[in-house]
Length: 401
View (tube, rainbow, N blue to C red):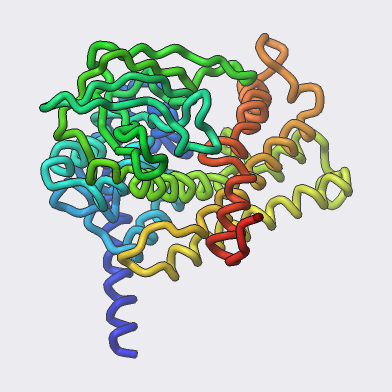
């Protein structure tokens, strides 16, 4: 009992520290602004956004639980949760994000050697460099282990040739973490995990335009690209294990996004519905059917958020994501897509705007978000793949013979 009270007292002390620091360092102009998402999309932070990123990066609180020796916050999971609560209280979002934080950094901390961690982790912590992912290929999507991008041993370096597809943000990335084939005689056991400097000669990036009007994905071509041997992470031909672990971190991050879609431009979904559809004499949303569905969605979104928090609290401190991230990924995708559908229904014909003065920026964003969100059930491993993982790794069902 005394130990529990002492721990709670420590957390409350940290809460005060976090609250004071945020009050002094968070620019109020960035309330509810997702700076990290904008940076991932290619925007270079300026003004208050740049200042906020610099302060959070220097403090290490953009990666709060990462080791202090590499620039991270060095916080416990409980302290990180308190920090997140205090940031949410004032509408602050972490300006440090992207694939380096969500996927590659945690993987490198587990599998990288000291030189690799010292070289790359501090720059991820401060948001100095951006990463992209070289996994899928035109003929190796769901069956990722069928990849054919090869890395030939040339003594002091590998020579990489091949093509990757759906490489998110490759046009902005400084580095790429990439799965390559180093043994043609074996499938899963012939894959290695290498780091490629995107400024290396022989790399060509081509944009892929989506129905949402954006080009977040790219085709990436490697032609006689030299990769130093020291950029191999883990053992030669041991990349499949590392690659699977990274996907768990990715799905954990993607799953965590579904429950945060409750606001747009500072307005709740409920308030948006009242503004567009109107209210009855009691101040409730006038359309009773829509009111019921909005309420149901908000309940599901809140339940999902609480489930995430419980899963994080119950996980052992030295363990990262598990196969359960597949459940979270599927649930988060559903919550996000349901919100997008409801948003367009609420806006009516105003929610179908693509451009022009007849539509507000919020309405245009809603339409493009709805279209872009169709990919949520595909990237990071499709819903069908997640269902297979859930069946085999969690439920223990046998493979179909």
